[in-house]
Image (cartoon, rainbow, N blue to C red):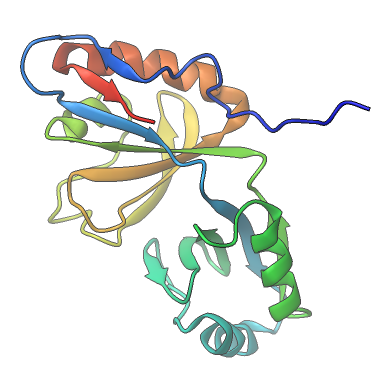
Length: 200
């Protein structure tokens, strides 16, 4: 019996190396975040305060009330709407995150694994904001999109979730796996003039 193997959303598309403008340093760096667990969390009716308390006890953070990132014990929560968050973890990977959340937040929130349905790419480098400005209709200036900032938006007509972990030159972008090839074509066309490097 053959064993199923999980493949990256960018398998055969994102190959390590330097692309576009070849001289000088790379204006943009690209890293696929294959180390993450992702899950959506939505509070159940009348459970707002109980959910906040349970998250605080289980993960050591206060749930963000707006489009921001809150970091806790092994899990971060990104506000995506009223009573809605995307949970992200580098230690509880794939469905393990959703299972952990469902167990600790039972009866307080609806939890759905998003790990297999989304891909996450980290874009960084000195020209990253110039590249993102070609497709993302939000202001990424650090004065209005600081460390810990997040936004649900569209990038060249593709729905994305964008957040900053702390480095003002790096942005994590979560998108549906089904548009990975379209995203990569957009990225290649948009970043070529600055030179970009795909890291492992």
